[in-house]
Length: 165
Ligand code: S3P
Image 1: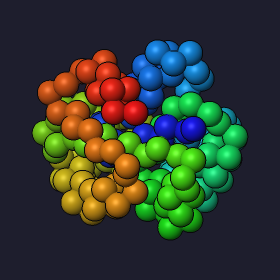
Image 2: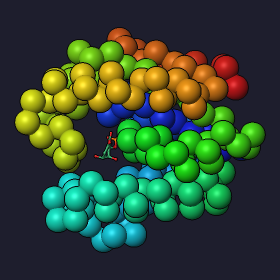
Image 3: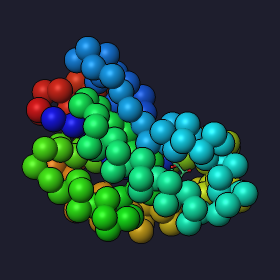
C-alpha cells in the first residue's frame, strides 16, 4: 500500500511523510525531490528557466513512477493533483490518499518568505489564499482521509494518520 500525502504548501507533507516512514521502518519518497534528481536542477530553477508547464510535465512522470514503484509514504508536490491523469492514478484502490489540511495563517507562517517556492513569489499571503481557494475542493475530491494540521505538530498529525489506518 502506498500512503500518499496531498495538500498545499505549508501543510507539512514532507515532514509528516518522513515521520510515518520512520515509524513504519519504510523509505519515504517525495515527488519534488524526484523531479530535482531527474532534472539535475532545483524546482525553482526549473520554473524560472523552463516554466511551470515544463515542471508539471516532469512532476506528472515523477508521480506516476513513484505510485508504480514505491511502497510506503509518498509526499506529492502541492500542485500535483491538478493533473487529471494523476487524480486518476490516485483513485486506484492500492493507494490511501491523505489530505493534510492547513489554514491560511498557519500556511503563511510555515512557508515563511516562500524561499524555494516559485509560485509564492510576490505576495505570499495573497498567493497562498488563491491556491487554497482553488485547490481545496480538488484535495477533498481525491482524499480518503482529511487531517487538520493547524496548531498541531507533525508528530501529532502522523499519530492521527497511523490511528486512522
Ligand atoms: C507547488 C508546490 C511545491 C512544488 C512547486 C509547486 C504547488 O511543493 O512542487 O513549488 O504548485 O503547490 P510543496 O507543496 O512540497 O511545497
